[in-house]
Length: 305
Picture 1 (cartoon, rainbow, N blue to C red):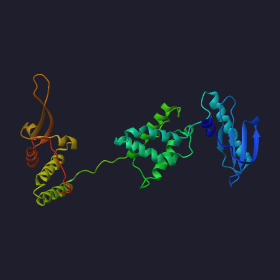
Picture 2: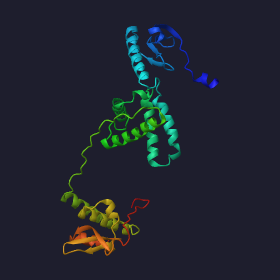
Picture 3: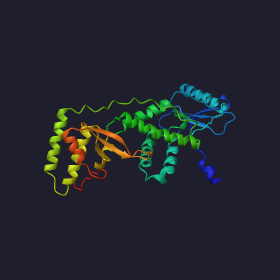
Picture 4: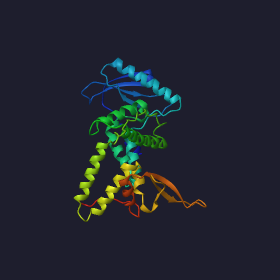
């Protein structure tokens, strides 16, 4: 009983009050507020509890208009089987973070917790019943405004939306939210890198030469491997991850103009199959043959040499 009474809303000190619709709409002004705005309390027939709101207006007629609209919305919600009262989003975020705490060591979970902490001041006073597509749009704008550079890339916004959607899905499972709203579409930015022209190529090769000339003996081998790695990428167009798995023993001559990389297979009667074809440009062929017998591994020293 003590716990139940502690949860009950404290009755405000009323300066003035008005009652409408046989007590269903109750307007009052609080004595502890300097600005005499009208507050609203709604009681819907057949529903437990009250709906409390601030009209944010000092005008009685405007406050009644807002209260009547709120009463009608609440009545429709109850008649359609919905809940009269809605949980605060900030309370849901607290429970969500507590639920994730056990997996904070995982980087993806750590970022979800950080986002939840950033959302708390942005959704202060907001209820789950207010969550719709327009709410997500406004929340995204607030996240952009509080960011360090006051701008976020489309990819970052997509990642934030994915984490927010996961929180809302969790809220649905907990019974705080009826359904996840449709998220606004985020247009992808065109971030295609400019073409790597001959001037860029010359600059790269010139720097790589100096990179080896000035190398300390302890890192000379690693720098040579790095140079080979860059030359392979520049001349063949293969992906970074693919280049890291290249090993010398898999390279074979496939003709007068190409080298071929092969891998072993488990197919009956087939010992290997081709993966990549590399043009036999003089320095590119030499570079490929200089690759290590194991998968390429480039390490940086503690001093960045």
